[in-house]
Image (cartoon, rainbow, N blue to C red; front, side, top):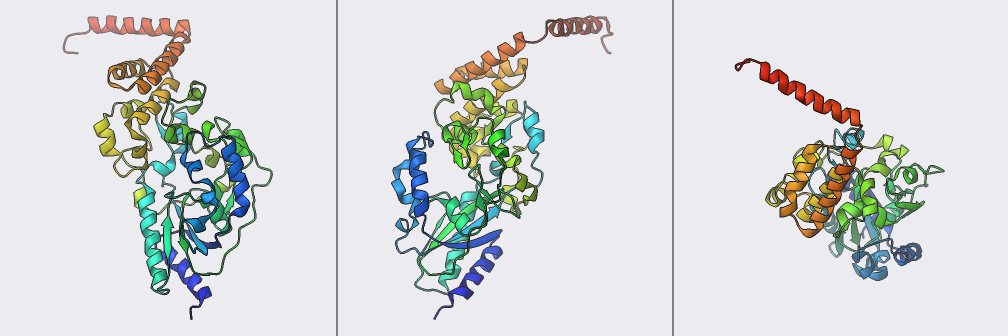
Length: 379
């Protein structure tokens, strides 16, 4: 006879051995989340993410994904890189800001493989076990499950917050059909804090615990495949892939834990690279350098679109206008539309430069030319 209490303790130990920062266990009843999810869809807060609605309420019914499921083993894996350079990059407006989770390799395969290993270890003790791993790979409400499993509470920005580790972590699930003892959700410690609502550049957190994805920078730069609405473009700043602002401002992230996976460390200098450098990449370079990166899935067209917007938001620079113009004849219609917008933004900023500053720059240039003419040839 199987001692499920002892097995649950072993599962948590095995999970730690596989690199997970925490493992929790819960039942699969998410019925209390069905109405909230339905209301969210009814308000069209999912935008163009049709897949959010295509499976109906299956997201709140995990047992439909694995018939006979009794428990969900929920795991988290820290990803924060060693030197995140948050504020530094957001202030350097001629540089690109990429959400910290996407600086390294894609986490999906890594976590799924480890969840599968965990499932096999459990199966060695329960030969009749049926299991199925998930890492953003199926319609399932992973945060409510993680909360019920004791991994943290859902913050007002809708991300999971752990009292000892902040929110810089990935989530994964393993559905199983055995009656393991369950853990319990922690107390929600957001209190009266509304820092995440106030800091959001686009006011996407329309009320505590509700995000209108259509306004979220992560949605606009990653999920949206069409043109970014004009009124939203200036609000993106230099964020070309995702946004971390609501996590950056969260007081609980002072306890954020660094990731221990080498795969999540920055690649190709994405943690500190100029917009012009990235905009110069050809499609071949993009596909090669983004091999194994979550960024690759947005495709080259959206990559160029995002960078064009960021270049339009950058301070006036003749090199930016030159780079934008050079891409006009070799880009898709959607990208060209964003390039033209960016060129208009740069032109407005040039016109707004103080007249005396422009005059001084021209005078300085003339002085330099005059001095150079008077110098010896070998000087």
